Length: 198
Image 1 (spheres, rainbow, N blue to C red):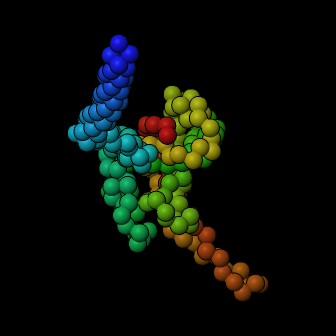
Image 2: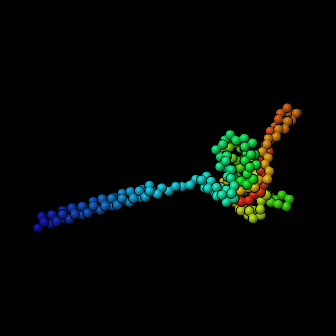
Image 3: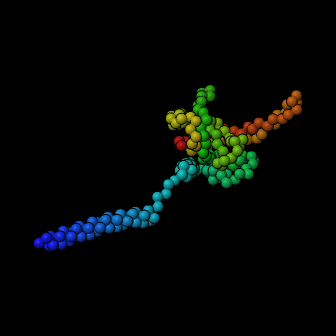
């Protein structure tokens, strides 16, 4: 009787051990299959995260398309050897242009509102190549311009109508000091037609 009881306990213990290991193997297999399915799904549909530059490029291209005008960055973004004559020719040929700029100020001049934006032709361009756009600003755009922090480091999308371009260098000679100073008069004047915040 005692031997049968021990055999019965041993058999029960063996069954429980087998059940335990089967459960462990089943859980491990389930976890592996779930991980494998997730990996296959991610490979089939990779999630592409857009950079801010790509988002701004898309915004700028949309503005250019809406206003049927060239996009400044399309013309000059790959040219790091840019001369003033090329820029003047571009603005002479294109009176309406979409570009990316940094808001400098919004102010009242006589009886009209004006805004100033700074822009460069390509990322990483030297600071002395920056150009300022001094633009008449429609009153309906003022609230959009002033709703974001003035010194935001992200660029705005703009569409401008160009009236005047002054990009030439002027040389001033001071005879007393026997030195010459070159001051850049790099400025575009015109009207702000549309603006999209950063």
